[in-house]
Length: 121
Image (cartoon, rainbow, N blue to C red; front, side):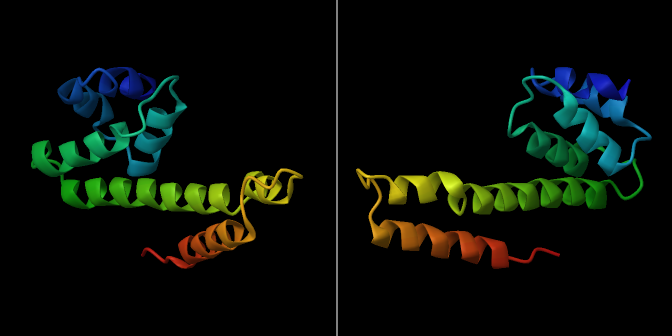
C-alpha cells in the first residue's frame, strides 16, 4: 500500500495518503513518497503538515511530522551546497568566455561553504 503514497499526495488526496501511511515509520513513508515518478517537490511538506493537523489520534504524530519536515530540509540544504559549490559553476568561471567573474566564483564558493556548515539537529 505504501507504494501508492506519491500517487495519492500529488493530486492532493491527503486523507487517503494518511490512511495508506498508517503503521509506517517516517523513513518508510519518505522512501515511498520519493520513489514515485513525478512526485512534486513540496509534497513531503504537505504530508508533514498533515501529520501535524490531521493525525491527532496517532501517537507522536507531531514528532513524526517534524522529523519528516526536518529531514527533507536537510536534503535541500545538502543538495544546494553541492550544486552551487560543484563543477558546473567552476566550469563557468574557468571557461574561455568567463561568464562568471572571479568575484562571482568566490561568492558562490563562500555560499556553498556556509551551507555545508549549517548543522540542523
